[in-house]
Image (cartoon, rainbow, N blue to C red):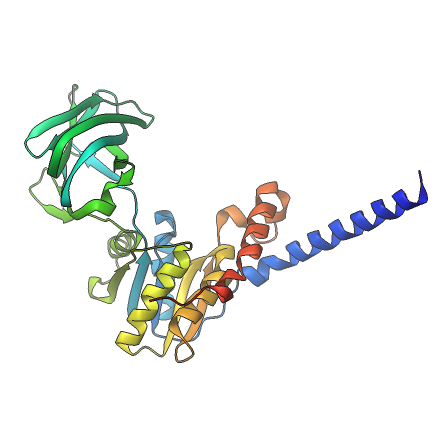
Length: 312
């Protein structure tokens, strides 16, 4: 083997080893825990629902008195029982191609009523699939309700909507309001954003409703985290906050703190709490290729927390 080639291979191996050591050492840097001692906390609404009981326990343990949830628009995803109905009022009359992605138990299906006309009716499978229809004239209201061809109990969860789109746009982005009409006669406000969904889950986990304030985010731009942080920064100034902690998940914590610090400005002390992520366990994450990819991706994204441009 030529001597030059040996040096190239040696140098490449050393460089690769250095990168691996750097990435391996980055995990505790990214999954930072540094609470400020504040009595106010922000919960990032994108945290999966199954983690929110842990968030609730953290809120109780640290004695937070005020809780904000942030989050961008979520898909029109709901679970329906017999005789439930999703009712959506659009901001403006719309027409075009409607797509419903849904799945459910054997014998279940759904019907979509646009204003007063049934425009789509299908039987679904246990695996979610897309079903489409054309709205030829502008409509103001959409109603989606489960159908079923087999006997069942009223409390059975019959249908799940994964998303609903109109001309490629999430219907939650077009809505004026979304309401879930339950078979029992009760009405529930829809959850159009992750901020709304996280607040709802925290209340269901036992958090006092008066403590929770959802802060929905619109006009996302290139970064959802920055959009959420900027929305909270506006609220922090309005409410005169001087200290706040942010609850994030795993290795996203470093980037979240940087963006919330920039959005809040120098007058607000921002702490951070990183919940353990089961998919990225400390001490074992490096045993899976996906773990390395996630750490490298998050490490590359850290500078964005310092370089984002201030906006209105």
